[in-house]
Length: 455
Picture 1 (cartoon, rainbow, N blue to C red):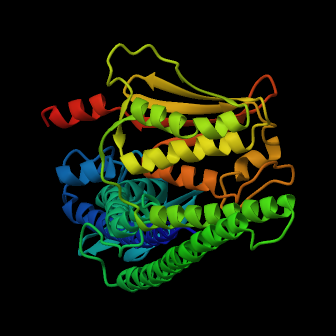
Picture 2 (picture 1 turned 180 degrees about the vertical axis):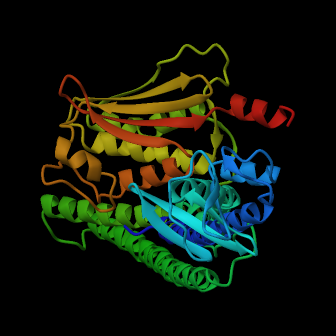
């Protein structure tokens, strides 16, 4: 995957390094040439400073001090009189024959020398310097001119890193805003700062897409809610007419046939009710939080389903897995209607899939600042391969027994998600039945202490 940041940094840093290398080479070559010109000037200055009384053989005992510092006193001097006789020769002179006036480079004894000849009225002065010495000094002086560039390069790279990082902040903000949004959040994007001109078309396109998705989602939810609402009344009327016809004898059919018709009708009515509940959950992504007595809701749910459980000889009970002395120890912070529907759907689902004579237990738990509950049954359980999909809408596995539309767990999962809780399913260890657990509900006491704590 191509990274804009790596692409920008790579090319910018490569460009700066290449430009710095080219500039450094040019500065070095210029410094090197200027150093050679300076050494040529030094040779000429030494030749002009040779005293007229200089005779014999030895070292030059006086002369410009700065010339000796620059050349490291490695300049050879030889002087001839007007007749061409040698009258002076320094100790390190390589024995170069008398040449013509001016500068030239020659080779003597596997060494290259830079030679300058100066003609005066009564003598001829010739000074020479090893080219190796000149080159070493010239390179050293040229390298000294590069230190500002060596200091500028890392500072420039650091500046590039900073500028690129700052320039990509709006993109990172946009990515963070998208990654932290919930699935139901279809509101337009709004960044913390002004959107750059280059990113504005992308943000506008995303906002337009979100608006179209929101319109389509609202239309779908409205259709489902309207369809379910319109179906509920005629279905209820149909059931009443069926019961009335059965009582007055105007409907002639076998008892088993009437039972099957009523069973199918009840199933359709339940499906419509679940569609309405699902539409309400989808239409209300935000919940109004309040203190919810979870234990009282659990007792009410068990009481509501007790007659249905008795009819199938199912032992339905409520257990407290955590020892809580406070009566409000199981109070949660959430939506009372939503949590009531959540409990009812899980208990109803467990009863429907538990065989006659089975057992269904609702277990309340308290874990520090969090509360939750489990619904355990002794039904056939769910194949492991189907566990990740049983909360999908309208999904019913091939081995699913009992009545149902495949919406009960989907509605329960949606309500748990709205409360920031996690709904999980697992088969019981002993191989008999399924456990549906809801964990992560904030307890009312912890929510109250958090809201009252100083900020």
